[in-house]
Amino acid sequence: MTILEDQIIGELVAKDYRTASVFKKYGIDFCCQGNRTINDACEAKKIDENLVVSDLNALLQSKSDGSIDFQNWPIDLLADYIEKKHHRYVEEKTLEIKPYLDKICRVHGEHHPELHEINTHFNATAGELAMHMKKEELMVFPFIRKMAKAKQEGGTLQMPNFESIQYPIQAMMDEHTTEGERFRKIEELSNNYTPPEDACNTYRVTFALLKEFEQDLHLHIHLENNILFPRAIELEKQFS
Image (cartoon, rainbow, N blue to C red; front, side):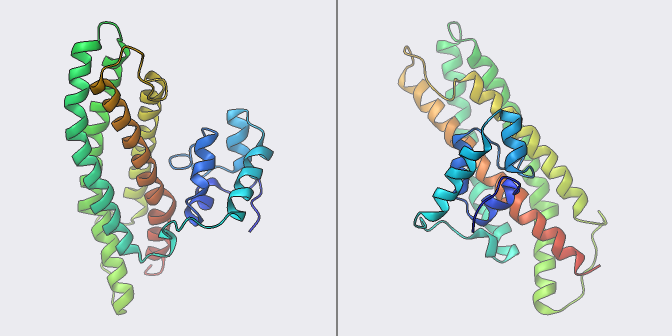
């Protein structure tokens, strides 16, 4: 396959997650704004799209790194994976990061006031993600599992009280965009998670954890926005 500049970013990453590394290299959002073409994204960032396309094609010509082919997973298995892998990660890491942020704000906040802003943004993200994930676990994912079971067994599907899965999915994607923007602010405030020279070990560990959290969030949102949600919408159409 040859990649061209008019192809959709999210679709490319859904087919081969290795391409995400190229988009990260150029600072191109492949999850929350994955519905843009390469050309559109490059114009917005003032990047030469030929460089991006060249790197993408060179990557595809290289040997596969054994990345997981989420695109071909059963849809209910993918929902289970996201919940058990990424939702649990958010819950666990939130509890780990919060005390660290509070501590470095107390110790270093006077000389690095940006830490207080980072702390405010992260606490907002933690609270919003907690509610967001519960909505997925109680509403979106159960209906996806019901659709998968009905298709497998050839049974009928009772439509949900939200009429179509497209409505909660759009709400989830809007919330993804909000959290993606919030973490972009954290990345800017932290100078791309680069600790200052006077940073203590806790400071350095906190920034490393925040960077890891953002990377996991990108994959988390990508799996939902670019793979799970589009497939759920298409599956629902088969019952209508």
